[in-house]
Length: 80
Image (cartoon, rainbow, N blue to C red; front, side, top):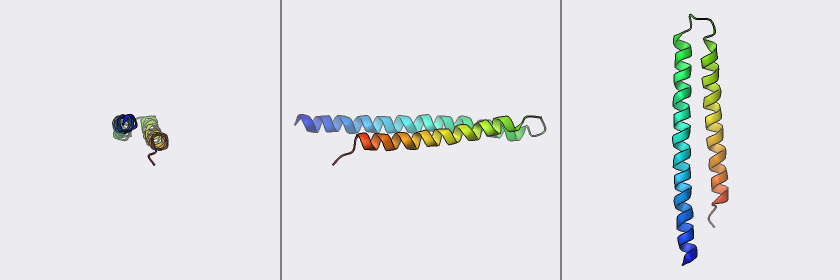
């Protein structure tokens, strides 16, 4: 009986961690899209490529971290 409650708590914690990860990743993706849009809207200025490049790097990093975190969480809480 105690193991069933513990398993239920683990599943709830896993769900909270995944939801939090998706929300943080969505926030980072939103910020990166704004950065890319700002860079492309100021093409006439020198150095317009800096916010475009940083936005793309941030987006790639956010997706990479999210995928690795979900894989780790699934491995840690693997149910048999």
